[in-house]
Length: 100
Image 1 (cartoon, one colour):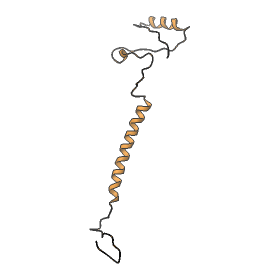
Image 2: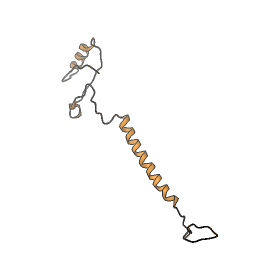
Image 3: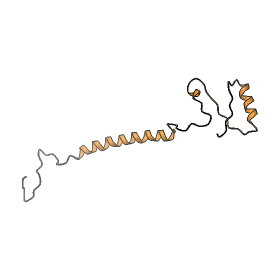
Image 4: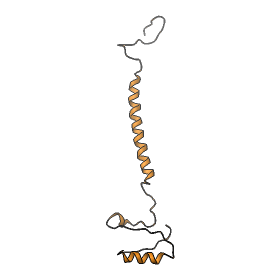
């Protein structure tokens, strides 16, 4: 260790800093991008409610393959009218379920 003017710290070699601060900026920048991407992914999952662990009333696995379904929320007085309209429109199957 060199002593210069009564101070004992390491001398700078080749005009380099003792601690390279710009190297930490790169890691901080990349870490910020990584955290931003992960936060965006978690936000998409939360707002789109993915994955949907609890299936809603009216879901049928056939809807994911080759069929499509229609869920109609109506009162018990309107139920027969809705069934007649759907059957008249060519529905293959009309089911009644409670708890929508």
